[in-house]
Length: 314
Image (tube, rainbow, N blue to C red; front, side, top):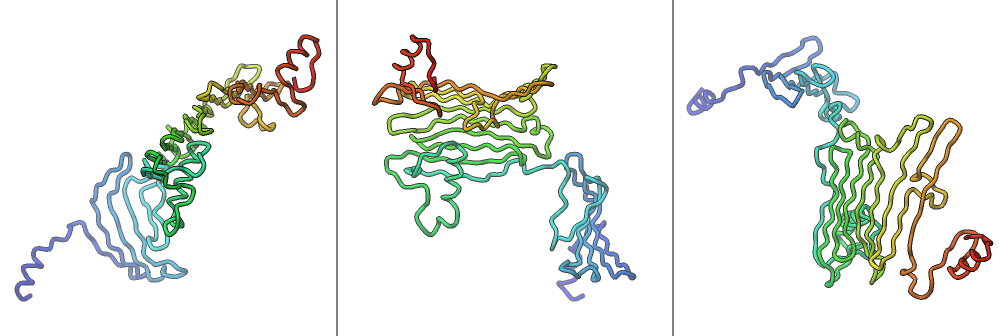
């Protein structure tokens, strides 16, 4: 070989464990690289091969196969067509360690309508960042010179735990954590967890501090022997004007999905408790007790108690 190509070729060093093989019967050509020795926790990749088989290049397939050998999940080898297939999913791996789904920050931005919760707020920011909003006015969020900073983020951990955060001074700020069942054993212990801490404005002069908790399914049920009890969801709201609300699984609109459940051999019950004080939230008149069956003012309530009669709605 003429100069300088002879010297250049001499400098090229192919791996000693690189091999090329051909199957004369099937026409398959295989390029193998061994002795890789890559360790991933309990797994190990010893070799990688690229195989081309002309006969397999039909039906939309490329005829190319990537093969991995070593100590792998489910056996000692994995193979797939890189042109038409995704790499095999590793059993038990679950999702990525951290997946950022939403991340936004800006100043002097405010929501058109104050969101009802953290998920609503983060979802609104996500919609505003969609490509459809790039060529026109930002939907659901507007510029407000009196507004402070807006931060919103949504991260998914191990494909199962969602952490959402929003801060929009002075309208809303809070954190939401939810966990669902997946392929990772450790997060599965918290399957069903819903925990939210939030502050938001209700009116121009009144705000509310809220907390919501639904226990993980692993500790939601308590067995007392004769019956089993399922804990309700808990909700607490404290308003800046002194009002409050305590909701322990109350079946609003006869929906008992968040209620306490007692399940025994001969007994099944579902219910909840609702305590609230809203007198200060009604500056134009006294608080009224309202039910689906009647309307009872506090003065009428006292009069009926004195008479010993109990009207509908009391």
